[in-house]
Length: 73
Image (tube, rainbow, N blue to C red):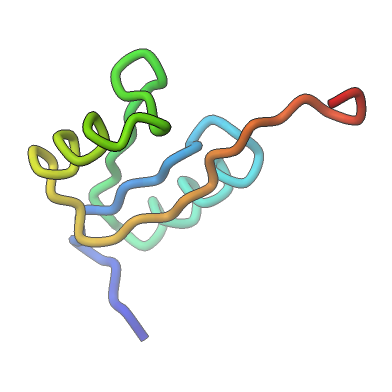
């Protein structure tokens, strides 16, 4: 098992249904949680993501970000 207590953990998509559930679970594990808003870093821009990762240096990453639109999409 990978111990998350005290680790810096990035959750992409932290505001969505899955991401917010991950955030609650990781908070119970006492992980140091990192998030970033869409206005700060566009996850579709590889250079921006690389720069952000270089600055923040997360030890674990959970990817829950997605394009959503419900049944209409």
